Image 1 (cartoon, rainbow, N blue to C red):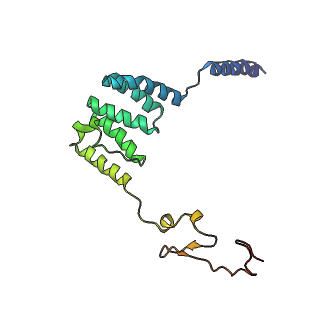
Image 2 (cartoon, rainbow, N blue to C red):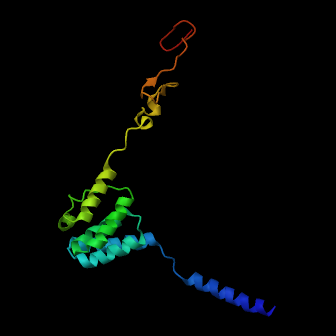
Length: 174
């Protein structure tokens, strides 16, 4: 009974402390950091902009804009390791970027790691292999009963029975 008297106030204290702790919304943190970084990047203040984008990137690492922004600002600052790490994460996501078109990576284009990343991005951008299911016409363009044949990718029309009755006014049978 004595243990219960001690445990209950401790439980209420823990609940009260948890209720006072602010919730951490990683998306809001990331958006706020990005919002602050954009004017700095436009003013070409790369280091403070990079720190804010790093905060956005760490708060929401699945957001490709933050990952790419962090890679670009890291390249502008000269941190090739962080830039390569962020670009590798983008390539692992299956995304494609043209690194040659972005002037942020101009000084890093000759490095072997960036050439490998450029090849990975090109492979991500390549079309998928031909697939009978993908190449078949969309189902809404097939008339009822027409089915694509997977062997030769042709549409085989279903044999429709002839209408019974005599033709009357246009569109009606008698």
